[in-house]
Length: 359
Ligand code: DAH
Image (cartoon, rainbow, N blue to C red; front, side, top):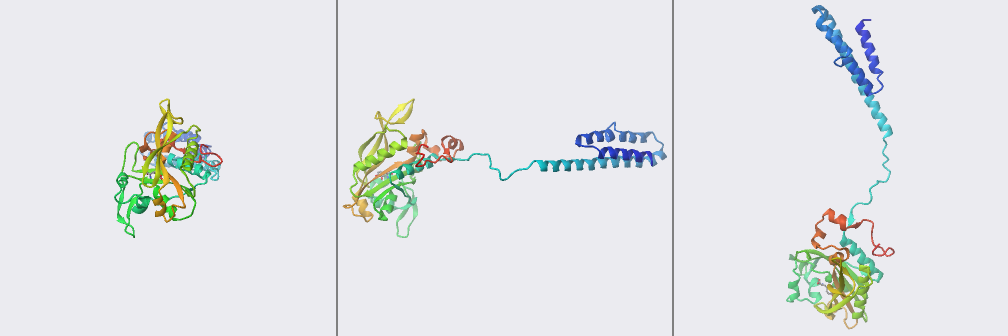
């Protein structure tokens, strides 16, 4: 066997014996590096005679080729073995629970709606809803607001161009009061219900947005008085604000759909520059209410001599702002994640009858 053949075998044995990539790299440098043994052999070509170079040249080049291939083959084998080893050890158990907690948050408006439902269902009230696209009759006429009534102008209504099949003008409801009409028309008496939902008016500043939320309350039964209304509102607001020093003041007012009508103020005081409900130091208007107008009751096909009731309407966004200390209504509807993370509620932190609304 020629010397070169022996040298080749020796290098291939060393390369194949390299136990890891670092050892292989050391062998590669020892053979093919600048000072490497095979590189040195190639350098001897320069000092050879032309004939010698012709015979030795191809053999030395073939040696370098064989060593280079052996390095590449060993490298591929070591890398494949390394991959197999990692695949065998790095297992991922897809059945393990993900460690992230619940994501997202409950919007304060949704939270307050849940709280209202909890409080009123405790008092025996049902929760009802109605359409946001209403007709003129349910939104105004049935509520004793006829065509020429100035209250229509005050509502800044968004009208649709189309009418419904009966020729009624369609609009985005300006309040939740039309839901009163819809449930009274069902004639399932007595009625104890709240009706939360979206409402729309063409209005926009720090305390008004074109879309906002209201909750309507309606009781229709026999022998209902203003006293029932006051007790219900006091019980509701005491539970909602989670304070027992809530004081209400009823001021005579006017709404076409109630007679008599009362605006309800709630007492508050200042603590470190913040408005805190409770006490009788200062007063703030909170909601509208009254005894359902006999005309409204008869518009729904009920006999006002037999049935009476009370109603109230309150801004939900306002309730949320007062309870949770937000001061700009527009932020409610910006969809800013930072605001939602700050003011939102944990996804699973839902008020329950057993946990209370503040749970
Ligand atoms: N619908 C009235 C509004 O949006 C609020 C209201 C006042 C509702 C008195 C009532 C009520 O049910 O009795 O301004």
